[in-house]
Image (cartoon, rainbow, N blue to C red; front, top):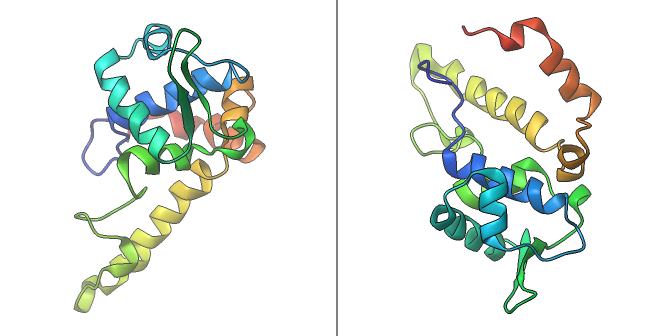
Length: 157
């Protein structure tokens, strides 16, 4: 999205999710970074740094050598989109770099803290409930499908 106040997903997070989906469709094999980059049209050098973050978090594992590459570090049904975004970008929602529950607003703006906490909970309610097994099979959870099928969800505001 490009309008002000939008929830933004970084290119880093988008590429990480795409890379993990690609690996989720190949659960029993190691896949090279080059193949992932080609399949998902991701710049390979950028992907390499993303894969390092995903490896550090245990989302992917790697193996060197001719049969080397990357594979998921756990079953696709146990890895959520939220896990991957946190691994590469940190917390799902911050305000000026701070966690919503750590904010304090004076006077009339006091109600903003629970507003930001609720916004974060809404984002988590989607991203923590979609696994890479869901994405790899193209079957989103019913709750997420209903949200996406709402005509208003597709309108620019």
